Image (cartoon, rainbow, N blue to C red; front, side, top):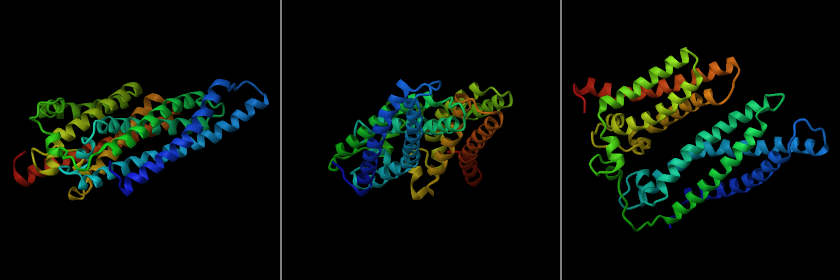
Length: 319
């Protein structure tokens, strides 16, 4: 069992969110079952008022949950200092069987919660509330994921044995340990870089042709290849060490917290890229989201590309 001020804070906040989200879930189900936009009964009027209140509660929870992810990552790196063998958050994630699924679920929830917030905004701006049923249906799905995330997080933290030695990030992200991850990290650099720069180029072309569904698909691929190439290639130039592949150490002070900037750029770019294909925005709004996606994806591309170029100019060779 591991208890720190950061873990207590996360647990208390999540329990509060669970309480309010459960109330919102109950009323969301009622709205889905009984709401009729064509009815003029007292019951429908009451449901409309409840829908606005519940949407506000959900929006508040999701608005807090998104930046709370950063605090979660900070907590992982903070408690890594008290776990034997851990050098960063990677060791904490790997300390139990719940760590990796929890991290993947949290990343998925970031996109779902953000999507709900934008969908709710579009619904509020629509006179006919065209997304009302969809947003509450989406919340019911998001609620289930939220509950799973909260329970898994509590179980993970309380399952950590502070006396057991955990693997350091060097062992976890080794290219020679025979795991699926080592196979991915062992991919040829030219293939990774071709895919990385090629997908961004194709997303730019899909923007020029205004193919929003292809643009969204390419953003999903860009997210995946960006994370793989960061761990396998670009990260080694940030560390200036060919055997260091950890995506968590990028978040530490020794590397100027560059990871926070990279991950935020990547999240914003791919999130807005996904929105393009998921919501029917007005022409002006659609153009704005295209440009935001391309801009932040380009910023990510620019920053990670700087490090191998700078290393080569400084040393005359690549790693």
